[in-house]
Length: 564
Image (cartoon, rainbow, N blue to C red; front, side, top):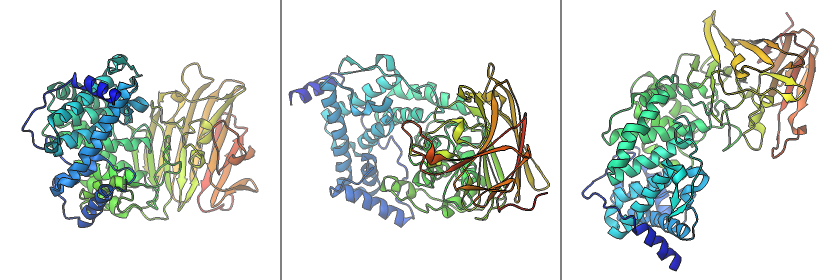
């Protein structure tokens, strides 16, 4: 008890006077339960499960507070208050012991949801709190934000606890959205002029500046960490609904992201492109998080062609409603009327990702291609890489078959790999150029990827051209390297390849080398590869060697046709 009392003594030294008379300073996700009775019933039953003591995985105080606000039931608010009080009390105990509280873990990654829990509970259920309790919560929130934005001077209980300040100035990174969420929800709930001013004059303008020249939607962090845009959209929607000035750049990002994700989804509508780290699950299967992002983007921009495409997507993907209770509340958002897209390709220059398909039916051939700005740590050395899908993966990064989902090197991607005596020549942070054009029903793609290797590299140039259509995909690579560097053309496939004359057949995918006509061919089973702290669970790789500044390879998605 002495330690806990000491921790509370420190907290009470920072007592703030909270504004009185504020009602719903933090706008809820929805203002009423809406017409979707099933969504409300599922969400309320989720809250009741927590109330009964079952402790469902992922349940947050925000869920209970929202249920209390929408239903008017006091029991739900009491649960929210108890949960936040437990968070604050545990923090006080850690602080009294001279430690960092849990909210500081992993460079404050979870500060957004944790302070949002506190803020909405204070705002929506504040009548249940004593003044002393409000003061303790306020002091905890204030010190947390002080630490987030001033990492070198961070402290707890008067003891220095500096941290790295990772991504406090990078609005393209998922951490920034957590910091933004924490600051905004507390600023709205407390009415703090200091934090509101910081948001208005610094934090939101930084977001606007980052996305000012960003076109096409999606994220340079890839298709897994890029789902953090859902948080950005939710935080921004709350900001806008609270009466603050809009940020047009985020509205545009939401609108264009709807189109991005529609096209990033494979024709069977149960997976998305495998771009960047896939840490949650290595195979990029459709999940609640994809649905959540689209629902929030649609809620921001509910009108227009992109919104109709998003509504169609939401009604047809494999996740027709949230599967995990922690996401049930998002199904309270309306979907709207849908319209199937017609355009067969989409390129986001902002993210540097291109998607193409031959039709909008489930048996269509689908392509993803990466070429653009490479400047995020969760992105991979995959500039110039592609994937192919027709009913299932025909060619895809080996990363989807790893245990970690975070193999970033050039060896696991479908690209031209450059080898020196010391090993692979890695790609660098860079800006790479892509041109796209249509002719006679086919898509032509040309990427200059030379910048991925940069000045001083033994790779002085590399361009890749793809000709994409229903019956054949042709890949042409031209490059210049300094001796003794060699270029290996490689493709990763999910099934065992076999030689068929000069062709290589991997399932239904036929790989036909054309230049050189008789290359060196090597077939590797990834389960035979040993890497520290990694397990390759499946997958194969075909390597072609012997190129002299140029490779040309034809890929046929339905088996090997007669040679021409």
